[in-house]
Image (tube, rainbow, N blue to C red):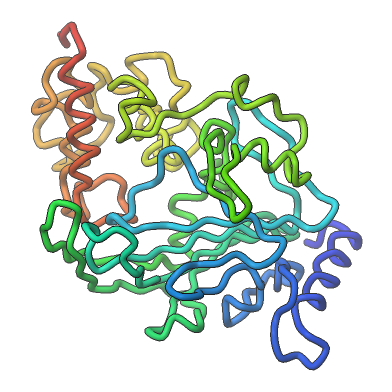
Length: 361
């Protein structure tokens, strides 16, 4: 059901602004199709991003951003953007996800360089995912880029792509990369029955970003642009560690940061994994809820005959790192979004568990 004529008018006006008078192309960003619940056939209808000289470039009025610790997606590099309708903003939340206004569009582009050892190597962009806050809430879909990197077309049914690249250690990796279907978007983004955003939290955005006009803290820049209201100075806001940067935190805090980014969207008390009793939010303080000496509810073969999610001092006896290591779809966690082991993250989690003291009865 449409919520208000005002919202419809906002979306309709934006959709008109998205195309030139002769209908030949987009001029300004918009939540194209949000008022009707549909998605345009090409990404350019949103006027959010384009690819220029191998780089994803935001359109005028579109704000790029990044996160302190990202979701792992088979080592893909990513480029994120957000756009809100003129005159709207998001209210600052200290320890909760930001609630964006109707009409917001968020994009996340995924790509792979041929060789991760080569600094500045060209990136082959694979897809751009779009989240649109329409009149009925958030909806999402994926757009896949052609080989010429000139146009991205909707891929509502999703696709599995066989890719290949050389990783930072010089090894050839061949992931079976998932372009998610629209229904699979719900797998990660559904929370308590509604679609949500995942990355934009204060602790994830409290970081520096190299904007075209200079480096700035993202929370400060969003405030300056009028996108964010009520934010404190960055030194007073929470900040999530960067999982692979020891200068940002000790092993436990960086391990918890990784679990926040890669697991908590399901393991949060209201997500798809709420019945497991495993809560992997960075703010969780109960060791048992974090999995310490906690038996799995129903792990089956995914438990590898182990008895607890985490056994202090013994990663080899713990279910959590075992499922992070696995690539069998019936065992691997997360269930979607990766076909490769994130070796560096598993090593960090193992260090975290090894450093725990105590034992399980």
